[in-house]
Length: 94
Image (cartoon, rainbow, N blue to C red):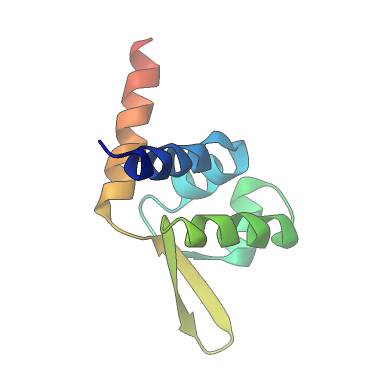
């Protein structure tokens, strides 16, 4: 593996190190949600959710679609769900 690929992979996994981001990813496993719904599910402010969503979007873990004045977020692709669920599976086995 090249050094650049190693750095990129480390940065990718670093995004999973924040509990709020993990809660957001977990909430988006099965359905898309808007910021206010995510704030309610996660139990934090819309501002905090928006901040974490910027990080998740920048890392290509979530995407959004616009419907009128509302943005709906979902996981970027099935790989993200697979990685998350594999991590959960590993934790359960420890």
